[in-house]
Length: 100
Image (tube, rainbow, N blue to C red; front, side, top):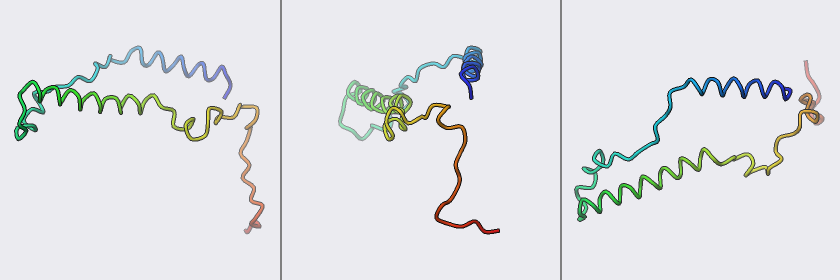
């Protein structure tokens, strides 16, 4: 894939996302979860604070999952080869003779 192809794909994706409906940020609806904390000896304000803290932790994990480049973490920053270095795939097997 050439640089021009990559730019064309990026422009197409940007145009597709521009027409997409905007997503609202995920917000906590504490009232939906208050019944889960009925057995806790806490005030309503403490329950809301606990729910908000748990929500923040879970949302951080989601954000982290979208921001981390796992391949770069495993293989290093240069895990992608430049196009000129990988024109084809070498599928030869040196340890096993071909059978027909």
